Amino acid sequence: MRYIQNHWLKVFFSGVIFLFILGPFSFASGEIKVLINGQEKQFSPSPIVQNGSTLVPMRPFFEALGAQVEWNGSTKTVIGKRDDTVVSLTINQKMATVNGNDVSLSFPGKIINGNTFIPLRFVGEALGDQVGYNAQTATISITSTQLSQIPTIKVHFIDVGQADSIYIQAPNHYDILIDAGNNEDGSTIVNYLKGQGLDDIELMIATHPHEDHIGGLDDVLKAFDIEEVIDSGEEETTRTYTDYWHAVEEEKTEYLQDQDMTFDLGNGIRFDILETGDGYENVNDNSVLTKLDYHNVEFLFTGDMESDVESKILEKDIQADILKVGHHGSNTSSSEAFLKKVNPKVAVISVGKDNTYGHPHQETLARLTDMGVSIYRTDVSGTIVVSTDGNTYSVNEDPDRISGNNADGTAITPGVPASSGKYLGNMNTKKFHVPDCSSAQKILPENRIWFQIREEALKAGYEPCGICKP
Ligand SMILES: [Zn+2]
Ligand SMILES: [Zn+2]
Figure 1 (cartoon, rainbow, N blue to C red):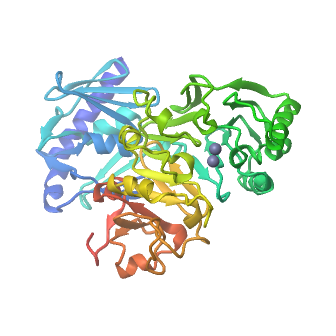
Figure 2: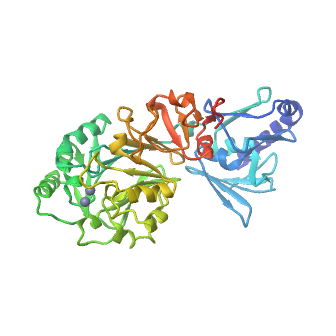
Figure 3: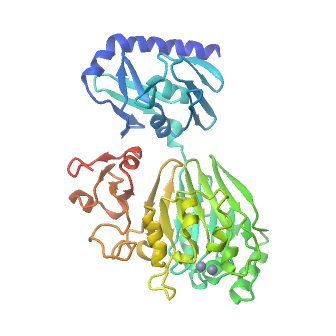
């Protein structure tokens, strides 16, 4: 407590020095540049200098540093959280708290044009990051060791043709596999997982006993140590089911039938099993429903669940940014009411080219398109990998497979990947473009990232291209 007070006294004095010595330069140099761990980030609104103090917009700054921000309108209090640190600050007050300890600010936080601005020093030091400001170049630089440690989750929608197989690669070697394609896909999946450096599988989900979901699971069970298996509890008399069940028994793994439960994966990541009822006549409806939740980014995995069960679970916590579309895009799943509740931004359809079912059905694609959802299909893009740090996410398609058709089946401009988005970013240069910009066409497939809205690109640290001015 005493230390913190002294510490903040020093910060206050450095604020005074800013005011008299460095302040005037910042006024002259126009827009302030921000570097976080050496990478330039765009902020909207931009930081400003007022009365010699550098003020930054709290929400985008905290979020860029991996913190969550909550606003309490009635008390005019902003709360920022990162790992074990909780920062609370009330507008127009010079006192704030960090983990319950009072700290004084050089200037009180204030609302400018609807955005909460706080003194720059308070941002980094409250979160334990190093903060510097060079007035001559008008550059803020923040070094955050915690930020570089923010773990990434990768969700792999493995291309197994007309079937499902999803591998969730969470931090600390926590691996989850949902389904494993048809019988003949077993070795493909085992090789894919080995290629990802998989050691063992903490959790295996068999959504329902149809061949296109459990077919390759026996091969995976034989190839890796599996800690726990969860399935729908439905049995079938097929050879495929018998092979799967024998492999589960031989593995001597923990086995459970689906029910409401939560797995804490650490780093604020949770994986939920959502009970949707059992014993439905339609085997697809018994699909185990699961949800992956990492701070601001959520995934919903539906197996082959169809509309009648969808309508029963609308009151459950099913909102998600990324939806694994039910039953390979069949029109018997993805009802409008369900899609409205999930409210996805990205839809992934695991489907085989020229399949005999006509999946994905046009009605499903139309419903998703009407809602402004970006559609990705394994028959078009190959294996699709969605990466997230809990704040933003990127969707990566198989670079060898990107050619041919758009998600809606229409031909695409050569060189532009088959995915929908209003802006195309280059992960290398951190610039974004309109898709028909000549520079956008030259971006290598593996460096491409799509954005639906301009703010999304800016928030992810991308700069607008100077030529196409997106
Ligand atoms: Zn299926
Ligand atoms: Zn099925």
